Length: 273
Image 1: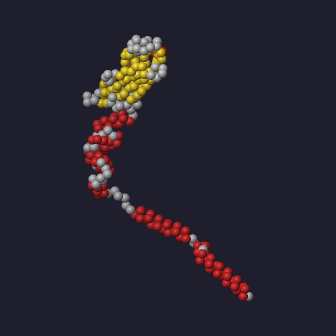
Image 2 (image 1 turned 135 degrees about the vertical axis):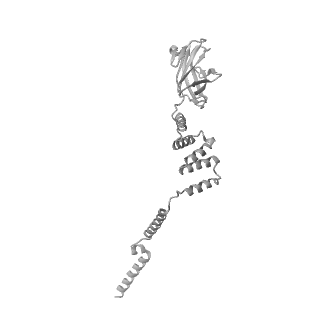
């Protein structure tokens, strides 16, 4: 009997110890679970606080922001002015925004400036300025790359696409020939008289079969054109007398636009007999 009482007492002690060591199992709720519930409550409270915040969109706030821009020591003056242009635009003060945009003289070549200028002229109904902006942006964004479409040795050139090509591009040494070059994607700038001007420099050299340069030539004055309307394709021709021995050669031709600095290189193989 005494043994039964001792055994029951031992079992009771084990249960009490287990309840102290593993309260999460005995209580039916873990500490981690409790922490998750607390986190959810905190999170919900935070969401409630955020939802109660009202958006800042008053005119007074814009005015305060504009006044504070002068204290932004890490910004240059032109960048401060860009921010003010944007603030006035957001307020619907397009006339003021446009005037301030025009005061940023050192940004007039930037694409950002041209796009903003187009936007504000449309908002203000300035049709003539808008048309000029559309034209400038079209020329800048949609212009074709400079390229050489044709390069031929000819005996006669009458005009664009009108030439007599030397057969098999085989030249006679010490006999004058004409280098005909057809160009596309030439940049044009509008002049004060309303016409469009363009120009480019040219130079070329000749390599023998080993890659050694045996002749080179640069034009002393650049080519220039003036047209009344936009024109992308041109042609030039140069006279050249090949004072070279018989053999196979390669002509390396370089054309550089004098108005926007773009450059194109091309090469052409020929023979001399």
